[in-house]
Image (cartoon, rainbow, N blue to C red; front, top):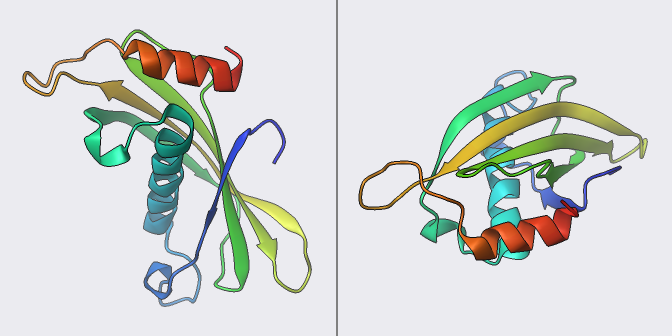
Length: 139
C-alpha cells in the first residue's frame, strides 16, 4: 500500500456477508475498527480496550465490493494531530485469489477525540501517544 506505513490484514468472515454474497457495507466499519485497534496496539503501544476516545466523525467512500474469496488489507495513517483529536485516513484494498489484482474497495476517514474518563470532556492527547504517532508518521 502506497503511503500507508501501517497495514492490517483482515479476514473476511461468513457473518460479514449479505444475501448477495458480498461483504455488507456495515462490515467495512468493523474492518476500520480492527485496523484502528491494531494501530493503537502496535504503533502507539496502548491497548485498545484502555482508550478513552470517541469517534466524532466517520466517512466512508465505497469503490468496489468485497467478496469472500479476496484478501483484505487496511492501510491506516495519521496525517496530523490535533490537541485532543486523532484524525485517521484509511484505504481498504482487496486482492483477488485467482487474479492477484489489487483493487481499492473503500477509502475512509475518522476523527477520534481523546476524552477525560471522569468527565467525558475532550482531553489533550497524552505526550507518549503524540510522540509515538509523530515518530511513526514522521509528523
